[in-house]
Image (tube, rainbow, N blue to C red; front, side, top):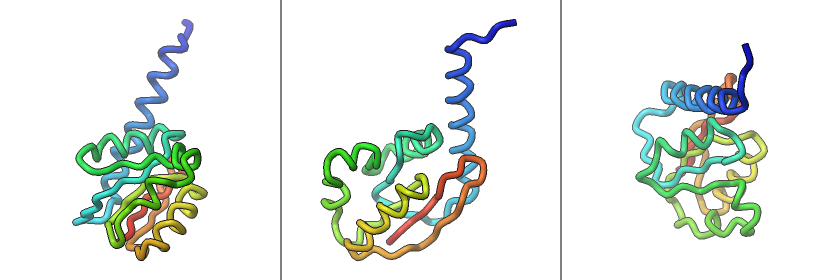
Amino acid sequence: MSVSRRQVLGGVALVGAAGAVGVARILPRGSEARVVVFDSAHAASRAYARGHASVKRIDLAREAQTNWRNMRALAKGEPVAGYTSWNAYVTARGWLEERGLRLVSEALDRRSGLILWSMA
């Protein structure tokens, strides 16, 4: 039995989506984030962002290329939630703290190795 590239990619996408669905159980209740930060380099992070289509979404993989334009343009005190790698989280947190936001919650999702966090 052989496995095609398409089957492997489909399986990876499914695992990433399943990981993002599992994140819902560790999300803080009553999270009213108006901005979602994600890292398109990670399938689970992309799936998390797709689950928040009604809010502004910022892809940190692209922000580095635009000199953090969208992060710098956020209104002061605008609630933000994210599901990113540790390095992306630390960078985003620095930008958001400059905008007057403070950490509300952070949790490590051990299955994906990503950090689920919120700031307000």
